[in-house]
Length: 236
Image (cartoon, rainbow, N blue to C red; front, side, top):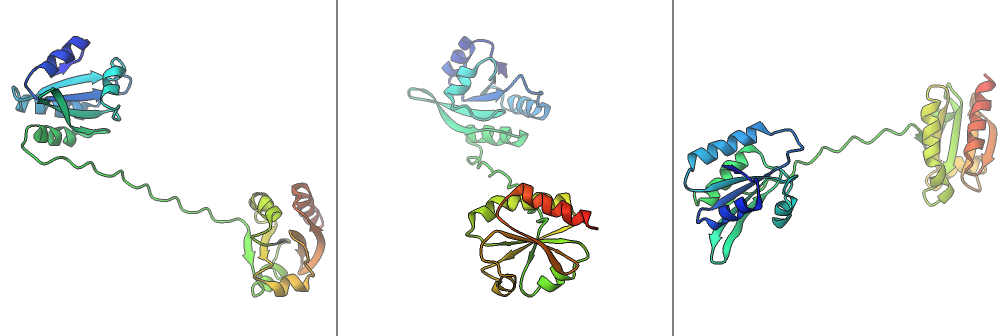
């Protein structure tokens, strides 16, 4: 096994009749000992049958680029053809077993290795909303009988200002968790409640305390919302 020291060495290696295995590594990264051991084992077992060349991509980026820059550590195997060596297999982000599999394939002793698809990362669980969706059927329980003040956001999915203020509603719901509740009522799906409070434009925000509406505002104004919350808490 040879570590590339100059361009002439690679030219000499490719001038032989032996098949060639190029091992691309990055000297700026920590040495991968299991891979190095696998290379030494394959080199020892197949002495005289193939030539292994270690190529540092930090020192020889042009060689790495010549073979389409596979993700290091990587292998490129080459066989002698009519016009010189041609690529037989190529794989990036290799593990020790890949060295043996590609060596066997290069020497005609095994099938072409199939690159395993990247493992799918489990989806992160969706973050639970700090606001609470309420409806005609749950309004009495979740708003009128709540033991903390409840700011109800009367909204609809098609309402652009409602969507704009939604992240702020989540923020204050988290900030005042345990002191106040932020509830959201979709006026399209719950016409009974929105009609009973004469909601005609949205977003409309009504603060409820002890089962009664104590303040009402219209519009998507973050400062106004925070003021409504603070005033409801000061009245305690």
